[in-house]
Length: 299
Image 1 (tube, rainbow, N blue to C red):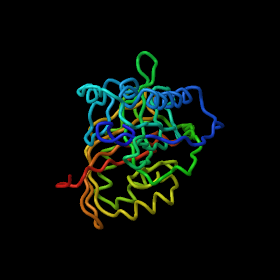
Image 2: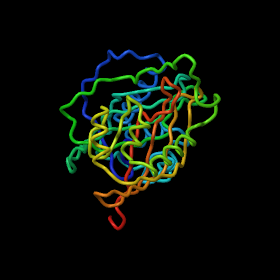
Image 3: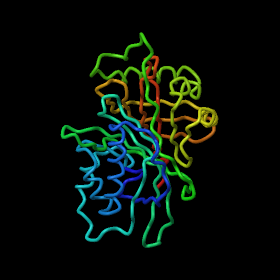
């Protein structure tokens, strides 16, 4: 869901000014428009109805553990009256596979409680979309972060850079195969053997985004380096799910992780990574986000 489950808390985004001048392919623009339609439906009909309409049957979010979103919604009766909240958001960054069947969007959201009982909450959503057999885009995974107040900031819509393989380079693995399980294993091996921050930097794409709770997304290489170096420790993880586009150039993985830090208490939770093939034919992380679980013993 856009950071948090509707079961626990619901969010809303105040309108911002977004650039419409970003040059996008028709396929990528269709993905952006699907995200915007999702947001409009949320505002007009509410979170429950919009999530039922735009999530795939097997689409998941984290509550805080991964669940099939539609099934989780339908297990609970619809409320007699609409909750006094409005959830709205706007895509600010988007990417799509060359096959046009898999993509992701991210951007700012805010929570407005129309009853005025709770303060506005702010964050960045992150959704992975997959084109269904009927040609419609549906959300297959959703995980966001809380951020500081962004009501006075604007976020220009950006398209991820297109990648063209260098001459003589080939795609990793045959079309239709899923190479990311092996890529994740190699990432984990190196993370265990070396320094975590440097290992991350070795696997990150030059246009990578790091999403962490309590901060705006880190998108500049130096900012990412500074952040990672400020979080020394050992991180291990186990992959739960993975999928790759038909064009074998964009995919994602998600799973559970454990972080043992030298500066703070141990942390457990879930991760999601988007991987993209770079011009050299190497898989690199273009977006990495974590969903920490509440500390054990906390309420």
